Length: 311
Ligand SMILES: Cc1cc2nc3c(=O)[nH]c(=O)nc-3n(C[C@H](O)[C@H](O)[C@H](O)COP(=O)(O)O)c2cc1C
Image (cartoon, rainbow, N blue to C red; front, side, top):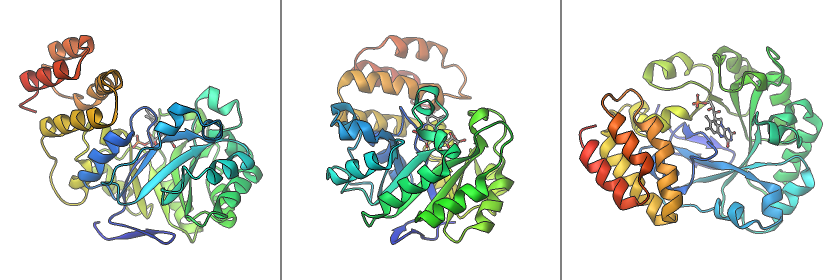
């Protein structure tokens, strides 16, 4: 599965995509995942309203690294006019692909009619996609199966996005009501792939070769989220290589965080990552306790050298 893949007029090196993960897929982690072999990475979800207000924090989330040969920004909002305004600011010009979040289940997002609330408003969702196509870049949509428990509107909703001009649809095969629990229904994604002419990507529960093999016939491309948080070298492994050692990756991650961010952000962020990086690793309790009280990157680096050089 190392063959090239197209989204609209954009060519990717392969079909494995780092999923957007709020709080995680900042420029440092995306750079790491590109170097581990991802065909594409996606920013965290970025508010079009925040962009329109020129919110400093929101604008900082638009940073990219030259390792990202193709760049994709994920936007969220509820009003097609906000999307138009955000596009016309110029700050999104550097992105090759624009993805629209239609899957976020978080209450404060949904109550504003954003994220997965758009699943209940296919007309507005289609207007957002069609407004974005005016800017000449491929537009992709990331959606869920449906909103309510056991609801499955994936085929008609995805068809409506295709008709509105989307170049790819990613289906996270859970409903909003499911959150991130329960099993993702990859067979339902196969039905979307069969119904659409544009490529369909699958998101949900790909964590190793076996879970990928179970799903490989169900979609054209594959998004990896939490599996990449546990080990970014999942991308090289899925392409036919091996899992790498985590220690050098963690050291690189720390370097990239310090390249782009202030020390406080870097330290707080890497702590969150350790909950994933150390999943299944035994004997790391002392390290975890120490790293959660570390306040500088030098301290974190020293702890990693002392405790994790072996993993
Ligand atoms: C911590 C976290 C943050 C997420 N943030 C986003 C986001 O910003 N945009 C989005 O479309 N999906 C987001 N998702 C959903 C993931 O992109 C993905 O669809 C979901 O985790 C299922 O894939 P996985 O099993 O490979 O993790 C997030 C998921 C997690 C766990």
